Length: 217
Image 1 (cartoon, one colour):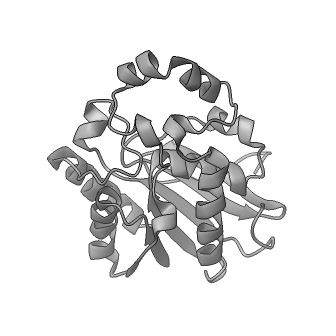
Image 2 (cartoon, one colour):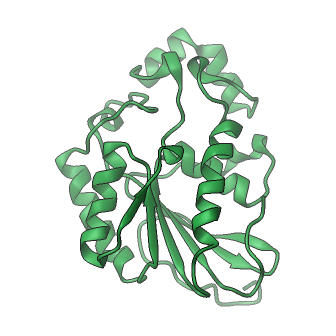
């Protein structure tokens, strides 16, 4: 699902929410509605100051509290309204949700290893990664299509949802999505529009994107 018609130069910034207590505990959150910690709010404020300098044209976010609070930091600096959408929530992971990483390995070891190998797995009886992309990627594309030429959309979401959405927008097969790696709290990835669709320009970044200068730009 490569989006965009070449030449418009639009940009999508996919921004993960700030730190939560469950992040610190390495506890699987999924769709559980966990708030930011004080440190997470500080992360959001710092990142918002950087992202505001990109002069985004639009912003959408997951409706879970950790994403809402993160988005509000950028909204307060830019004056942008935020479109909240449940389709941007994190992966629903059923019985995995609320468990620590160690508990998941102990109780669902084979399932975990199958997932890491890139096999389609309903973690804890929840969603497949392709189903997450099925719900999230069209929302992102729909809002990106509304951007002016050279415009920027900020998407405030969750690590798993962002990774699967990037994989879908780049046209990668699902078993390769794990190769993208995760995002740290309040870091972001940037997709830029090229002649053949979307290109990954930055991944797990915490500083302002720099242009690619060289023979492969």
